[in-house]
Amino acid sequence: MSMKDFISEIISRTRNEQDKLAETLTAGSNVNSFEDYQRLVGRFEGFRAVMEIIDEILREDDEDL
Image (tube, rainbow, N blue to C red; front, top):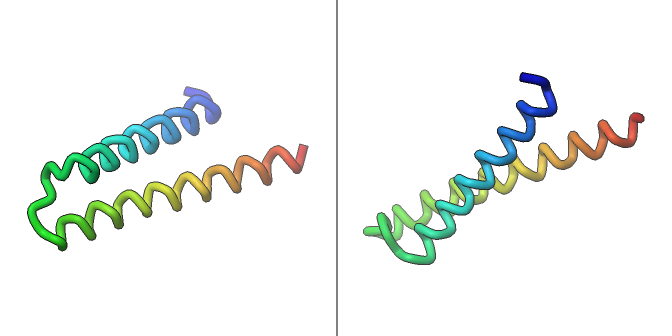
């Protein structure tokens, strides 16, 4: 697997997890308490932060070319 394929797979899986979390949060499934809600929102925000870091690294890499 090339590095580009590896990064694409990470991005794809991360977006997929974000979509699942967003669906869970909006449907209210598996959210039995405010603590559950906070945990899921925290995971969603964590995935968002990871995507921002990846985007930033890729932009820096493009600028170096």
